[in-house]
Length: 64
Figure 1 (cartoon, one colour):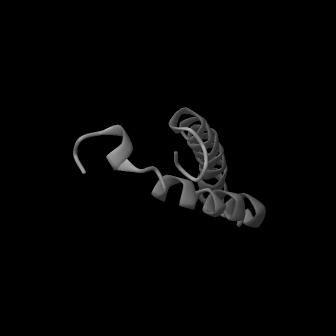
Figure 2: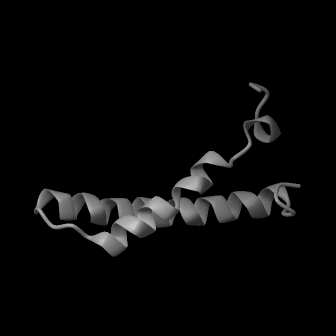
Figure 3: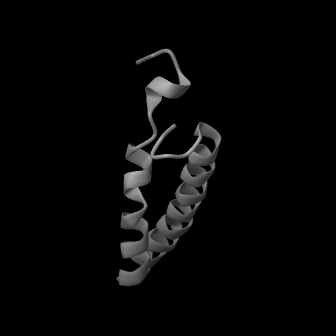
């Protein structure tokens, strides 16, 4: 159990949040390339960062 969710549910939530992060990251990058600050997209992208930090290695691999 991770944060009260099964490993498969946590993985699904992690993947969905990561896909949002990838999509908004591409929008932010496009905005930077044309010289525009996209504050809402940047805030959304930044809010997905904790999901990338919380995936526990010890549950899914023997490296930890």
